[in-house]
Amino acid sequence: MSVMKWMNPDVAQVKPYEPGRPIEEVAREQGLDPATICKLASNENPLGPSRRARQAIRRAADEAHLYPDGYAYDLRKKLADQHRVAPEQIIFGNGSNEILEFLGHCFLGPGRSLVVSEYAFVVYRMVARMFGSPVTEVKTLRHAHRLDAMARAVGKDTSMVVVCNPNNPTGTMAGETAVRRFLDRVPEDVLVVFDEAYAEVCLGRMPDTLGLVRAGRPNVIVLRTFSKAYGLAGLRIGYGIGPAPVIQALERARQPFNVNRIGQIAATAALDDAAFITRSRRLFRKGRALFEKTCGELGFEFVRTYANFMLIKVGDGAGVTKELTRRGIIVRPMGGYALPEYIRISFGTEAENARCAAALKEILA
Ligand SMILES: *Cc1c(COP(=O)(O)O)cnc(C)c1O
Image 1: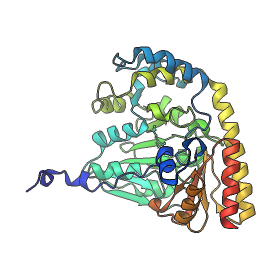
Image 2: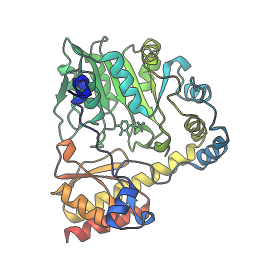
Image 3: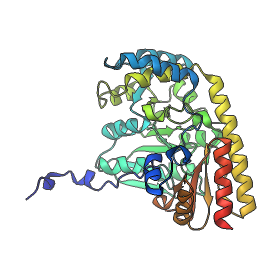
Image 4: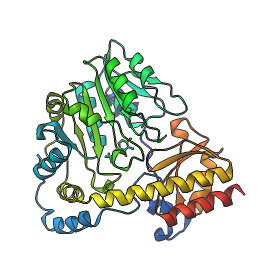
């Protein structure tokens, strides 16, 4: 007999998330200097944190012995002003991934099902499984969400639909018209979660989902993060904006000090650096142009992206990933997303992008 007989069977079924490989691990394995490795695997900002955020982090080090403000007053106030919502309409998570877990605690479970799209961020399915919720997965069209079909997939027991926009890992985006039509078709007693982790890096025009929350839509929550555009993935800060009653419910699932002190201070400072976001977006646009050109030269199909990464059909995704790894370039193979012919490349600095493009040409030659 073992303690494992008590293991929660729903949690036991969860397949662990496979993150992009850390630089240190690849350096050890390949016998390379970590400083020479470029990681284009986790959609991080290659510019690092903004200068203002770095300065704030240095100052915050002296206060690391103090618990954080569980209410995150300063950050909350600033975000509420910026997004023109009430402070009570915001919840913070240790990364927006933690908010997905709060959503699971509150709105999933046996008898409550989740609707998601094929090729959407895998964490949604992981959370549903963990809480024992059935999942309906709706087929995509040319790798893009079919919001009309997702609305039709909503059944009597559907409690929640998650729309990742722009979507990771495909980079596709649903526009304003599609989103509005979709919301008109989804009943008001089904929670619609827009995961907008890439909103600030978005290379197109995002639908105004926050405007819908502001206008009082009772069933819409928008998730954002400081991990991507703001370059603070290591500090783990995400947030959700939604109707006050939904936010209040989620607050019950939140531990008192889930969002760390240094992260709160850095994120608050990062919000003052709009120029940094503009600069980042300009860099991502160049990255997209370079990889589109490279795909053209190599005869690779790719999915037109609106985010800071690109899905490329290289043939043998695992094989090409391995060859790139040998050259000190970390990308993401897509076998786990049932796209074994593809890799996902995050846009890096111009030098990193050029190095990756050259390596792809060399491997395919
Ligand atoms: C990166 C990412 C997140 C969240 O990241 P956190 O670091 O937990 O804030 C959420 N959703 C998608 C689609 C992502 O790509």
